[in-house]
Amino acid sequence: MNSRGNAMKVWQYVFVFIIIISQVHYAQEKPKKIQVDFNEIKGELTAKDLYKKDFGRYDGYEIELFEGEAVNFVVYTQKFQPSLALVNSKGEIFKQSDRNDKGYGNIVTTITISGKYVLYVIGSENSLGNYILQTAIAGPNALSIDSTSDFCSTLDFLLAHSTAYFFLLENPYLAKQQLVKLNDAVYAFINEEDGSYNAAFYNGNELQKAESTFRYISDKIKLCLDKEWKMKSSDWVKVEDYKEKSITLTENVKEKPRYVVIGLFDYTGSNQKYKDRYSYCVEVIINRQAQKQNMK
Image 1 (cartoon, rainbow, N blue to C red):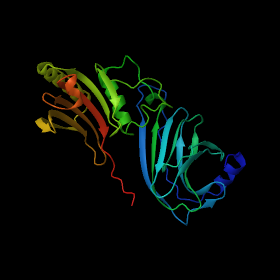
Image 2: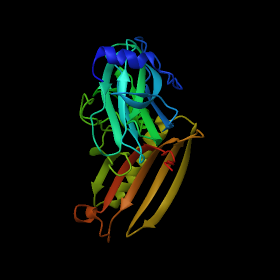
Image 3: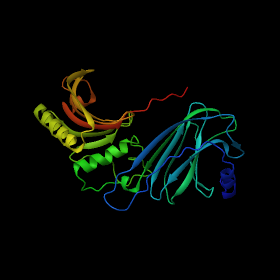
Image 4: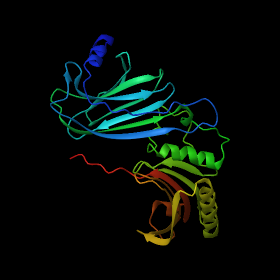
């Protein structure tokens, strides 16, 4: 299914349910809002879905995309081996996922021409079952941040990317710079286990300095966020063989809120890996509440 002619035939045969995933056209005037969008669709390939020889059984989703946007599309399922194809308004395949046998399909690319596209979820002729399709889309101004940006601007940039669970922030195909560090952070990384953004502001053996750093960073973050963010404080509690206290700021929305946790960790007497290097750590953790999955 590589020729323009075949792709156009597939376009003519589209008779599937269409879900419009709307995007915002990014204006050139300042100030520019950092736009990162994320959608999750629970779909299913059934015997009623169309099948095309040399293409497969498929569902199609219409998406409007704009030049310069970065996209990360992924579909996964336990029922069959899926693949993805992004087809432009002329019926041409703009990008398709690499073949694999790992139960998922993935497209990561930058859009070169604005227009309406169709994102196809594809299986073989006998593929039937549920799947989850996730779409992460970032505007051109969300792909990098100026090194002179202040603390609140950098936090806003990171919170925008937390909307899409940081799918687009550290992708090697899209990254235009090293992983962004919150101002004054010692280092930053994406946690591979839960996908959260982590920035360390203090690693050392002085409790007083750790406490003052914790208060200082907490106050800065609270000043950056509006009053719609709910705050919860936790005093020292024991976790496994170490202690921690924290302040959590959570977005006041009903579904999958974003959150920021400022944590102070005490590893004195702990067998954790940090013990050999330092006793206290102050970290900021940014993420978005995960969506419950049901692949039955």
